[in-house]
Image (cartoon, rainbow, N blue to C red):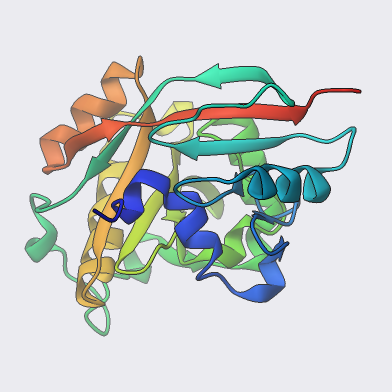
Length: 239
């Protein structure tokens, strides 16, 4: 029985990604470091897959494996492990109620806009302040990112990251501390889900297993926990 692509979402996203965003060997792949720290190996990794990943990472490097099950061989060292949950959106409350321009939920009058490379310095600043997860100088190239500005300042954002065939992950959901409690991130997530579903895909996301407020929020929107998914920082064992 074939594994579900979301059980190993990074690998299945890497194999479908724009080639300018990744580097790979025959049996392993990773995003360029300025795009994402994630690396990937097949559902049933062979020794060649681990050797290929080590070749990409280098003897002094590291990568993050993010999948349902992570079993690391002796030739690798686990630096850190973050327990998480993967959630999917068979339905999201209020998605059909989101009005927008051209049917994609973008309302410039409400301060919502599509973010691009010119916005990266502000996006990085917001990420540093809120810590939603890994976000690099070229992460914005993985998909659509939306932001909300007030008085010209970026105060909330959310976007798309992993994209295995038929699915799109919502990521980098964050709001400046001074603007929390107003539903800004909720609105952005709903718009993203609307756009994802309009493409005939299903939205999913990840949250730290101990981040109860985030899990409650996503559950209230209609997301459901699908499985546990650990993010594991690994590096080749010296020698």
